[in-house]
Structure formats: structure tokens, C-alpha cells
Amino acid sequence: MGKKRTRKWRVASVCALLGFAVVCIGSCSKAPRTQLDLSVFQKAGASQEQESKDRFECHTRAVQRTGFDPAIRPPEDTSPMRAEEKRELEAQQFVERRKQQMLYDEALKKCMTERGYTIIDH
Image (cartoon, rainbow, N blue to C red; front, side, top):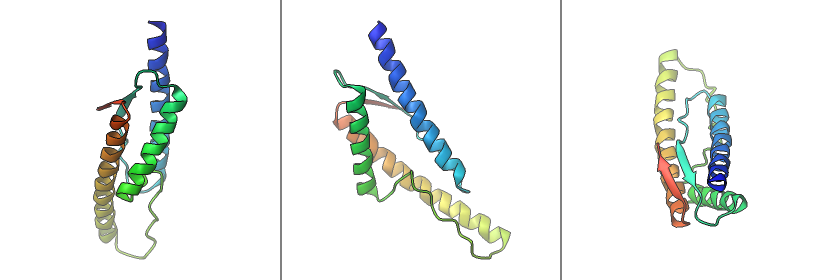
């Protein structure tokens, strides 16, 4: 029981750190960002180092397949425009970024699942 509990705490810690990074990235941009809400459970016999390596490789693959990297903030539009136009543009950008985020999330989940991890989407 002790090993299972320790493993769950490690997974929870990694998820919390990744979630914190996502929140920090999202809060730095003007457009709101939805946090990826996933739980990743290690495959049997995988070390924390192996999980980190797999997650990084899956992130890289997801970025290559979708052309979207959630760690990169979109540039701010500084062109002069009316407040109404600006709100409309921000809404369109939010919708487009959310679509890209969803494609990225699916590619990441698929890759991790192929490597034997259990992914639970909340």
C-alpha cells in the first residue's frame, strides 16, 4: 500500500506542477485559457524519470502533429481599434486557441495511451 500511495502522490505532484505551469501561462495572456484537466497514471514498472521522458516526447509529437504549443503565448494585437471590435477579435482568438488546444490535448492523450499510460480526462 505504501508504494501505491507514494506513486499516486508523485503523479499528483507532477500533475499539480504541470497544472500550475498551464495556469501561469494562461494568466499571462489577455485571452483566457482553459487548463488541461487530465490525470496520468503510470504504466506498470515505469519510473518517474521514464514518465517525464514519455510526457516530453508525447508533448513534442503533439506539437508537431497539431502545430500548436500550449506553452507559447499568442502575440498581443496592439493595433488601434474600437472596444467592440477588440472584444470580438479576442472572442474569435479564444475560440480558435481552444480548438487548437483540444486537438493538442487529444494528440497528447493518444500518445501517452499508446505508451501504456492510463489517462483520465476530467
